[in-house]
Image (cartoon, rainbow, N blue to C red; front, side, top):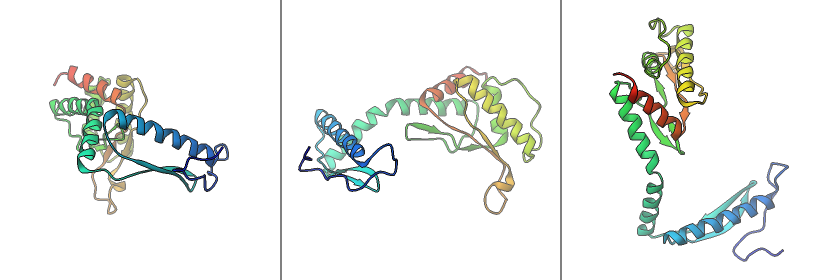
Length: 207
């Protein structure tokens, strides 16, 4: 079957033996068509160009757009992201209510990235999320103590969200190149649903 005039024939075979370049190309053409349809319905004028296979990956070229079109597109995406913004506000409010310092919290790729927190904060967060009261926090730079608290928080996350999340302890000796960093607990990235459940659990917890 001849290719459309604005497309380029697959240049090479994708590295995955189960999926050749032609299949990648066809999927990209379908994606291009879907994008053009949605943009047209939304009143956004951005021309999509050729589909090319580069090192086994299909790429759809997008043309230039004037600044008003770009602004319109940004507004549409912002509207679609509204549930993320709303949940982020709920989560930040819940952390603030309990004076929980989660400085690295941000939203990226539709996920809530929680970053690292202190060992003491991790222990308090676990308690607020309903973890059984354990021993008081000992030497936060002791590997066994850090692991105990990390596992305690991971268990609380699982009970609250219904999903297991990997949470990792980092002693001071592994933080920063000079070993002078404070020990920390690295939290997992979580979905919108999990973020809502954590925010609701903290909202119900006594300050």
